[in-house]
Image 1 (cartoon, rainbow, N blue to C red):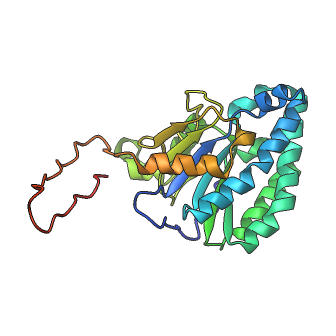
Image 2 (cartoon, rainbow, N blue to C red):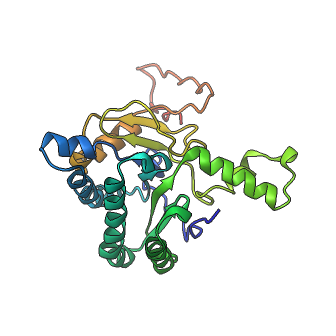
Image 3 (spheres, helix red, strand yellow):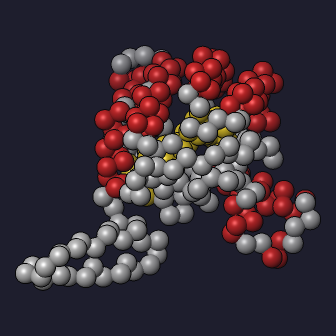
Length: 264
């Protein structure tokens, strides 16, 4: 399968309690449009406008790896007119945004099976990735024609075709064959519009991601909303299947009182 360029750098958050990598399932564009008696494509355009303030808020919060779920392998089942409008919107957005993203040091990486995209859109994707391949301030992954199950199957097929001994496969080998090779797994998955499912998004990578679901529709999800999600993440105790060490209780009268760090 065709992968995006390797990450030029792995920007780290400013604090240990912040996520290194945030994934967002951008849901609710259609409902946003329906509530306003607008065509669905108007909701998708509003959804595109919502991306920049969220990216900027993440950058200001020192969270620099963002993966956006833009179009799934199942979304081809939508009406043909809506799919065509989305594809045009992807191309228009690349044309409009890539220059400024490059100036700001953002590496653009597209995750998904590109073969089904039009030749012109494939070319725009390739040009955007080539232009930003050396940028190191932030990473923006855009998942287009992406499916988590498809990604895993394609990775195994590629490993088999390369002569890899499939009976000796381990987790690092499979991780290294995915679109996200070289990146840390997402620490936080945000889903807008209130749906309680992961919808085939980063199935392998999200094994221990924290989930944050909000009823806010994606076009209304902005700076305050992403800060709320980051704050919620920072308040959680991540156990990764283990039992955290007990906090040592220091008597109130003891001198030189020290507070135990929150277990991660």
